[in-house]
Length: 403
Image 1 (cartoon, rainbow, N blue to C red):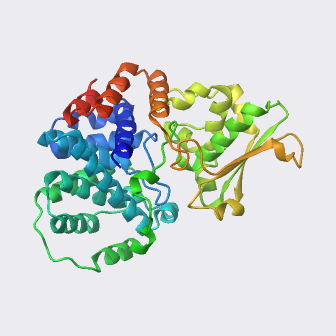
Image 2: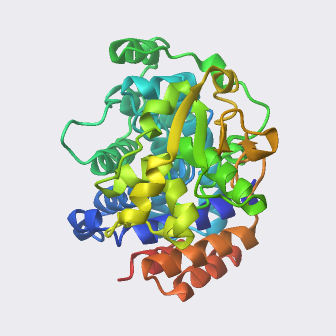
Image 3: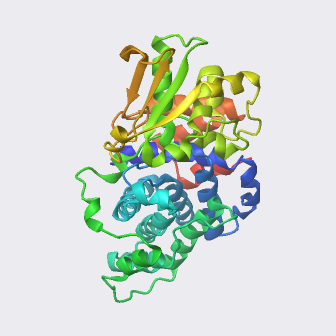
């Protein structure tokens, strides 16, 4: 498990480094170095804002964005070795993914509930509690108290990234002042009922350790569109795309509306969500797929004409694969009834837990992200060396936060 944790640590450290350079990060970067809670809040917000952090599709939860910052800050503060940090990460991922699965995060997310926000207290408490040497009974008590105190929906008009950071930081604060209380077996179910979803722990029954079931995003994107983007790139590798071809994108109906815009995006997050725009980048400017900040969107005539040729189709057939597979297909359709060889379907895209991402692939991803975002590639090489060679958590944190 420690090898999986090392890879998750490196991938998330890269995301956090990038996130701290986003324009949005300037609002919370000053929190760094202002105490444990403030630092956790800033690092969690920065990581999640990138849309290049990891994700467990079973619960539609991004565990690295919470668990890794909490682990780094708490371990560095206590002078603990990297192996202890990695152990805490394994437990934190387990807790956070189990919570998201128990609330059926992959489905309730489309009702306005944010599974990562709902599960953040569990990930933060278990990670921090392990590093603080808390007894299991105290961890369970802190987990219960912090979870039932949190909301599960993004605040309207506010920064969702900051909201997530606050939830993680407050959960760690609960650990610090933990006093074991009598556990109420029905408290989590009552919390879920109040938030208008069900809490069913039996949904988390899974033989494989949670940290081994996490997907790596190969570039910043909504995970819902990744399979279709990969399908497009694979199809483009073996077929020319003519000027007469329309591009038909088929995705599960449960999230077709979320990623289905076909007009020109007007801001960064919209460009990451909109699968048609991501496919346009893959066709016309593939290096820009790795641009996290998206301060200058490519919105010229060439892109507008390409987007006019893209259509998004909701598929009940793909719904049947969900949530085990967030699948997608692409067809180059010059005529009605395109040949089968002009279609590509992907169930497990690049970076999925099934396909895996080894160290070489993670390093290549980091190098592409560095080049696209004006980061010295040596920083990510230094992070990889520290993490693979048992560097201290404080040394890793220093590389992440340097300007």
